[in-house]
Length: 272
Image (cartoon, rainbow, N blue to C red; front, side):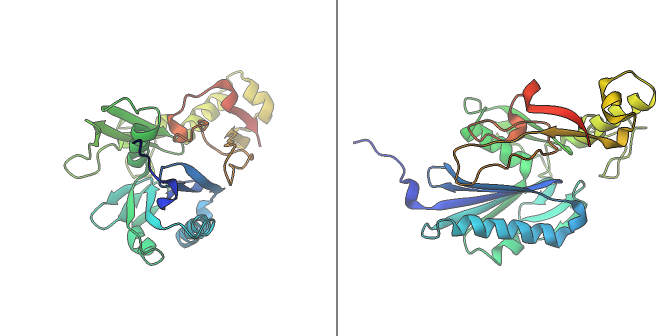
């Protein structure tokens, strides 16, 4: 007799808070994404407004099919997380400190709540469902407003002695380099992140380097943005077609955006 999981046995909610967007998905018991929503955020909104918007999206996802039992809620954030209590200790690109995220979610949901670094969760997601399904040893990097990472050995997350391994973006590359949001100088993130890339391009333009970008912006480098287009067909709620300030395009199978290969058609420069 062939047995399979009953997709209607329950649902799972997952959210991601990043420096420039909030994303929420709902899956059935077989891990198939059945609802998805993503919205841009601005740091000027403030911490409370961002968390409130995340909670609103989570409840919208749950109410989409309220007759399914909620089995758990997961939240990924770009920073150091104390896994003993689910508190976000420090998120430099969000400018958040000591935020009791698990406790906040527990006020709204009675199901188990898991809070972790978003790159760690993405590395596990790729291992179970995406590009790293056939790999037990994985080095995962995420590139956007910051640089994050997750490391798997034998299919298990390597968290290090303090529990915060994988913060590759904050390795010091240049001791006399630019000031990072974490407070250190010369972090890898300051060189290769989205904003680091902007800085390289702007400095080159200001130094008079010939470039089509100079023509597009009329020499005003502050108007330069990097935009990519996100589409996810076939879902109850599709990705908006409006552009987002990200460096990678999402795969058709729903893998984490930053794990997919960059193609010429997935991003472009433009003048604001």
